[in-house]
Length: 243
Image (cartoon, rainbow, N blue to C red; front, top):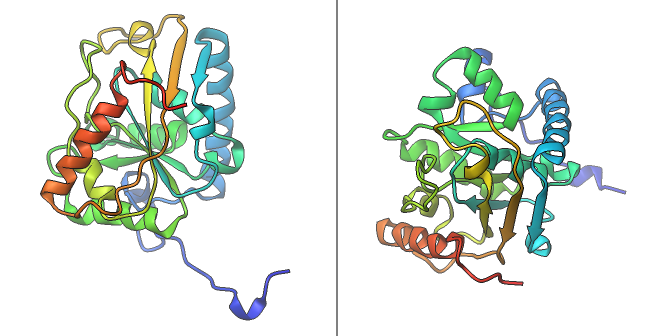
């Protein structure tokens, strides 16, 4: 039984954000209405993936069981985030947010609502991501209440080849004990490259590597770039499994 004397109420991070701005805010929380919509979409996406994109998963034992954490992966397709979000059990799924390009997914009201409902996305504004916004995201991680899915390349690969990781991932975790789980997706590009208007059926493989922590890495430019390089090596498709 919990001790009522030690009970502490913590208000939602987005409480002071105007309602019409919440879908495009990095402070957005998943409320009752949003959570219900997310749940429905998760079930539909899982059904779709099972029917059209059978998944082979290796390294499932490395999948986080509690928050906080960051999943990082290569990015070649809109299928990437759907696959990664589909692997979490329900007790975690509602607390996992995908960080998505604000200028692409949040530039209109319709897109904002779709991104928030379909994949529980939070915006990162490419080219103008402020330290304040990244600090807000980092603070959410350190509070231990959520997990993030991050694509450190910053955009989908147009060729299927892995692109250089940007140092923003380092800004989230340098000097922190938050575990970072490297993931490698194959098959998403073949099923739905950026040049195709819609996906076609195809098998997908997901390899999950052991979690990494960067508590001893300095929280500065050099540290951020070090983390980006280290994670890029682990996510590269030819990296041996850590099982």
